[in-house]
Image 1 (cartoon, rainbow, N blue to C red):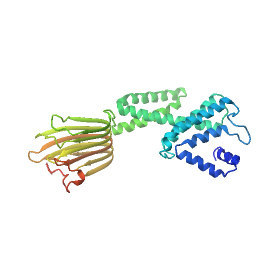
Image 2: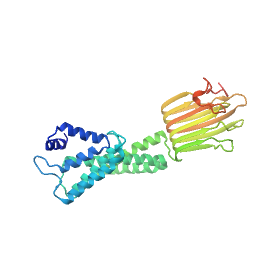
Image 3: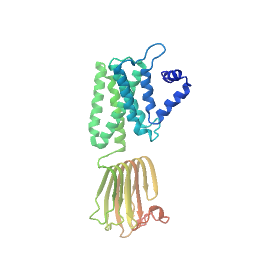
Length: 331
């Protein structure tokens, strides 16, 4: 229905065009190859009024078309077994390869549809914008926010100068594409420095307990049930750029906390706060001579969970009702 490819194949083999269209849709859903196959056949098949856009009687054309199909099959193969839908990564990969193939053919002097060429340019432009935006956001999250900001400002200055001198209006696209992820990373205070993965810490004494723990992206789990916290105040800083913090504290310790989550959830002793820019600060006083743990936790995007556990191996779900309350604090 776009270029008449399915209808042309159906007429050649005396089939219902709907069957051919269904076949293309199935190939597009399972691996994404149907999209690029359609575009390639759009170039190769003749129309009623003109010959094929790619001369199939040329050995070079045969090699180019065959190479594109083989490359398409190789790229799509890893995705076909996982039944990726049209929104999956296979379609994007295949679309980019198809767009590059179309533009390469036009650059070599081949004839082609102007609509298809504009579509190929649009696909590459959108892909480039997405890659640029993700790169700017990642660079900012990895500590290069100042550099990205300087580039955005320089682009803005060039736009202003171009407004007086004429031209350079296209610079607004990269400026906006870089500025949006930079603003998101800055608003969430997203910091991915500190490694990636899952970290489990269960120190056995105060000598093993660090004053701060940091993880770029992943899950940070800190269990303090084996640490005999001394009388007085112990300060602890936890930071995860994107992911989850799980802090387990002995029920004999009073916990003061200042928690911030850019986007996500704070679960503190079964009290849950969620949303954007979540800030939870609670500063109870320790009861009697109970130890006081002052926690400063920050997650750019994800969850912070702080819970009491007795000095044992009881999972949170098996604790008696009310066990996770701060019995060591003065209400």
